[in-house]
Length: 297
Image (tube, rainbow, N blue to C red; front, side, top):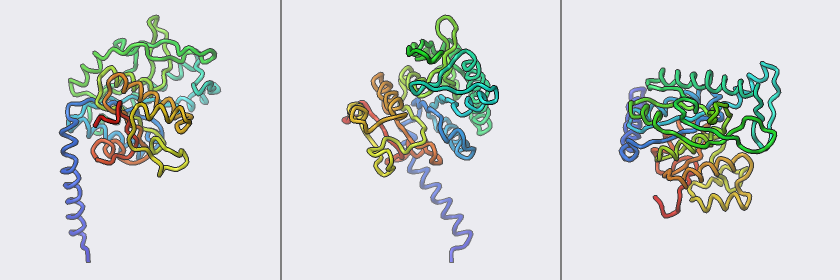
């Protein structure tokens, strides 16, 4: 019969074994920058939120340099409803008139960002909340399509502020609001912001937390997960329609960051507890990893 003492010893042995097996990965990525785009169910479910926060703090504690970028679509919708502003979407983008832009900035910068900062600090990390306006970190420009209002793209990323914080042991938490050269604020897709920041920092990894298993050969069947592919294969999947809908901008974001020097981009299922650690510190990972070339390790 297995006693409670036997169970405790086995649990402790498993914990030590896992830590030991993670050591080569910890050594490999210590001192490297990892940009995490935080969103989806992992932001809405309190238990998942707790595991993501703990994973980010763990990364920082073992010498990895995490930078967190977040959106907050559901929270924005909630506040628009409270203010009797009907959310509108066009071309898959949130139509952002002046009133909506005020709400976006209030929610992303003033609420979601500071909540994440507080959670990281409470978990033992040292976080600082930022938006693209801080230190002219991100310069925005209009997205360009008509009828969508103040929806922007990233024109330039200045990394000095982020690097200064990371070098001082802080975890930057960045919301996807930025201004153009005239000070006009823009709402920018958080995946895009994460990819451009990762590229500007020369990050080791860009990791997008999503509500899917990753890139699937058949989007209705999680067992068809494609664990590894390169830029050309990713583009072919888009061209042939295997990758469609909301996954297209995510894959394009990864491809663009890789083309600018990011070592690897990952699309992983944020609904799985400790998804970040499983992807970074295990051989198999849990999602899809995109690299610049299939010949890269």
